[in-house]
Length: 426
Image (cartoon, rainbow, N blue to C red; front, side, top):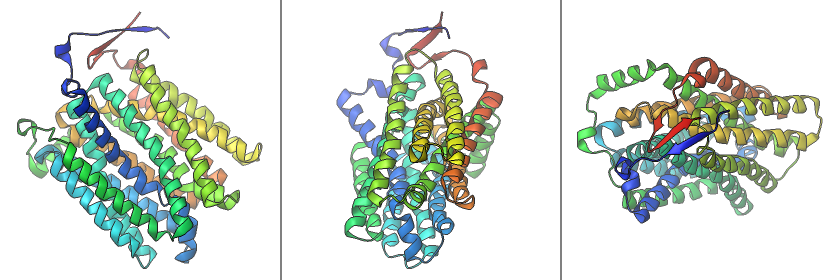
């Protein structure tokens, strides 16, 4: 592979976010990280309690996993609604309203008397968390672009990696002194704190002159225009299918490691944290790799490697070779490759549609969490075991790789000037 060099143009080509004072930029990025964390916290904090909820509600694993699916469905459809709305009326109002819905749903989850109501409230939690997710991405696109956006997405993926470490650990600790309902008390407090931070720190980043007020028809036209962009559609599918592999792990891991391998809730939290370490390390390595390779090169290479590790995981799970270690090592390596692919696919997708960043980010997020919502119960349907989890993880990586090379065709994408860094192969 040709080694590229980088050229830096004058300072007047800096993106709006890079013109901000360092302290203010740091505070904004910190709050964007908190917004990004709300979804993973909502999804992952109650994972150690899934077997407990199954017993408490006298239900089945597959039925309880549908409460996770409900959250993902809420995250998907919520972004489709909030994205165009944020393009029309600005970022702050949809953001703060959505988080308020999340806080209210979290309070009601504490008192949910049955699984049906809990699942419904989890959908509302997802809708609220969707506002945080899609507006955070839109704000990144308002303030940064190109490689600068890819680097910031890598930093935000650090949050996505840290949140799964902290969330099940916190959930496991909560379960040592209270029931699974206490997890939702913690989510209520977290949501209220994040809403306060966003209200105080985040400015309105979408000026009135750039707002899109086409109403319902305008929204339909915007989505239609996005669907005509083959590369954009391919990129969001790559992100969604990689997310499917991740959520197959998220939804199945508590049953695999606690029921199949007999781990305690606290031991499971540590194992879950180990997987997040690979995800975190990869996202941060991506920042350095961007100095030498383009986002499309990193994305393609990580998907091919992840496919190989996913196949190894499936073979070892099916044969039982290596036991627990035989599953964990390739699984953690797959998560690391997902950590490399995830920041670059969204950055490339959103860079194509800066004129409708909220809508483009909404469709991206909806596909990510929508495909994840399909993957989560699929593990339960296939048997809630190591083999079932491995099948869905491998399937997600296989599909993502095929879409990458057959639809996106990264080798055909031009090596172009991104942000204020020009990548030139020689």
